[in-house]
Image (cartoon, rainbow, N blue to C red; front, side, top):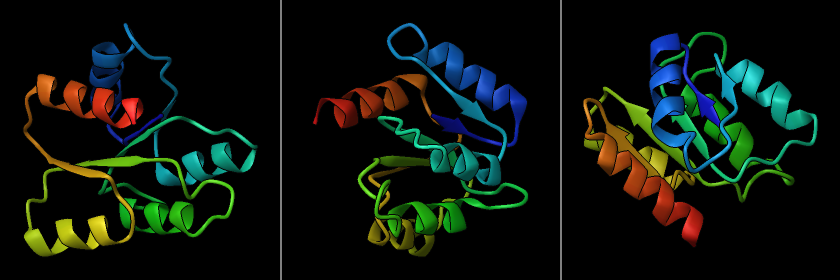
Length: 117
């Protein structure tokens, strides 16, 4: 599942990954939480940090404190490159944090690695 408020990013990530994976996209954390609440269990969530309604930090906390969904791996993609913020996300259960701009191959490698575990 790709969660990002920018349509261009959702389209880019979908085109990058859809050859090998089924991709579901959500335009914000609120819609993604509703999707999860309907007993959907994606294998991976790729998440933007800065979004309206429910931002990435709130989304991660809700997912990681959820009994049903707390084992879903999350990769955060953000333009914010601050070690304190990155570490705070890793401490609450984000498996990878990728800063923008990034090489597409880097994300593909991360996704493949996470899903192979």
